[in-house]
Image (tube, rainbow, N blue to C red; front, top):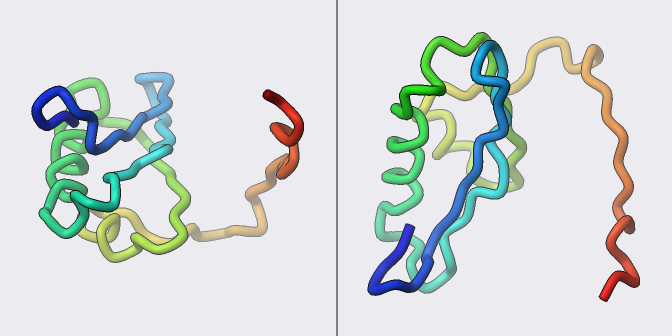
Length: 95
């Protein structure tokens, strides 16, 4: 998402284009927040042809639950089935 050749937002969807997609790295830079750009970005993403008919889409958010609920996202069911590996300091010390 750009304004006068300046990027003001970003999102990426990681998907196999068959059954699954993960929405990651969604942001609007601070000076452009509150203008409806995150809603516009989500509308564009959710209508993208390659993402139609997938069985599951997931995301993680710290504070935008209400935005994602508008697009059909809900809290996970059966969270005891989900696992992950987390290396919080993996990039520490990399220049």
